Image 1 (spheres, rainbow, N blue to C red):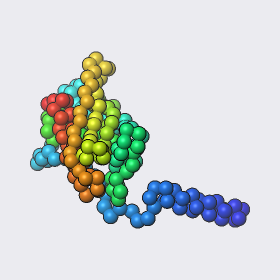
Image 2: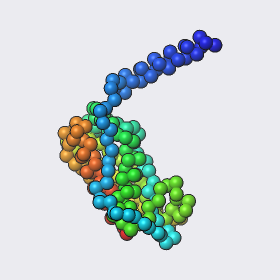
Image 3: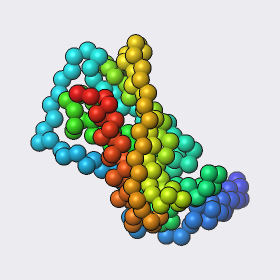
Image 4: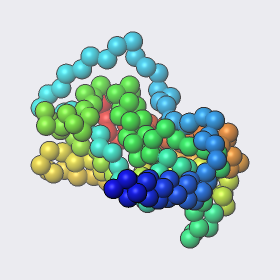
Length: 197
């Protein structure tokens, strides 16, 4: 039994070492990047809502290359790499959903609910797909693209709209991080206006 345990431990260590090599290995990045709201934070936020008037922000679906804490680089229509030495604090869909919720909270009079609170009264549900969230090598800019949908409880009304923002960058972590923040905030602000007060 002890031999089996030792063998399993050795196999696991080799597997992890191999995976580390595939993922770039070596030291972790010196810093982790996030996106933060540009909209000023009110001194306090106290909200109430009539039935059906709250807003529930769902975490968007996303392309496979966005299911990681790395930032994709679109090298060609069929080739994706990742920005060297750049790592996010969470996956792009979760970061974008949090930014969008906070932007709506700060720039509208809407009561914003977390999906876990939606059983109270989901109201207007905002969902969608994060199509792009990374650096485009051909154009030399960061692109954030969100296909949003709004639906009222019961689906009596459904709307969809595409939002796209770009910001120049040189492909390095130092420039891509702030550019992602700018483009993400532009998209979040446009979605907040779409949702309305």
